Length: 103
Image 1 (tube, rainbow, N blue to C red):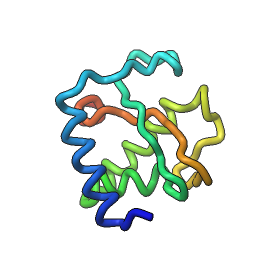
Image 2 (cartoon, rainbow, N blue to C red):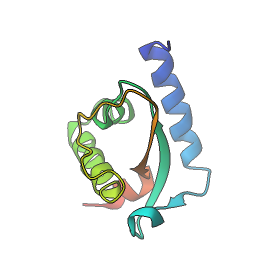
Image 3 (cartoon, helix red, strand yellow):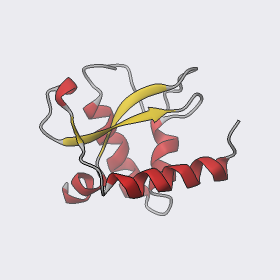
């Protein structure tokens, strides 16, 4: 089992790569907004992920959560900020670039 620090380090490396890799289209949800397919780990929630990505900004955490839920509305209509899965679950998350533009 990965420790919190190891998971945080992997998340930060993945986020650095996000800026250099073409982003996936959120076609599955009918959105034109750029998004990235993300493997949510067992016992991890969207809220946990938002805290890893934006550890010092509660407002960005809230924006990330709201946008992630919106992007997954069609495929996972019951997804909430605190939803926890028993197995790895792939979800769409907003790109950092797109999220920073949204006001």
